[in-house]
Amino acid sequence: MIIRCATADDAAALASVERESWPDGLAGSESDCRARINTFSNGQLLIEENGRIIAVCSAQRISRQQLFQAQTYDAITDSGRFAATHDANGDVYQLVGVAVARRFQGLNLGRRLVDEQITRARSMDGIKRIVGFTRPVAFHKFPDRDIESYVATHNGSGIPVDPVLAFHLTAGAKIVSLHANFRPKDAQARGYGILIEYPLRAEG
Image (tube, rainbow, N blue to C red; front, side, top):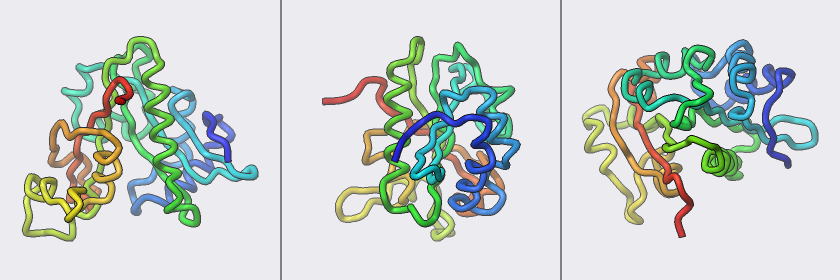
């Protein structure tokens, strides 16, 4: 398996992996993936095995002003295309999405890609924060619970009950803020996005 940056020729394969990994209506189209690559190819990483793309992870650079003014998915990602939101000189590295082909899920490929994104962000000039809006994917299973109490719920090992939130927090990320109506079409997350932040420098 190799990790590399995506090229324009990979757009269709990236979109296919997203469709396998994301709920209906949330995956990026081939056009969206191509726009991301054309805008910031260094932030579009993939894992390839024997010539097949099996996992993808997208990111962009934005300014701190963008981060705190445009707190919906469409506003902060140009509806997933990045063309109008990526700032080549932005001091915030924003992790936007990770997807793994169905057959290869459970192999920590998503973790490998996010860790690679973080490593690259830490080496870039001008980056002062590494953030992402993550999805509380199991929140729909708790219709009587508010987002604050849901996020605060942990299992016996102290790990958040939400698998995607746990993916980030157990790897060193911290919760910054909770956002209603971040992505209204995301029924699993009941529309919520959770802003998380990774440390700018490796710990330990």
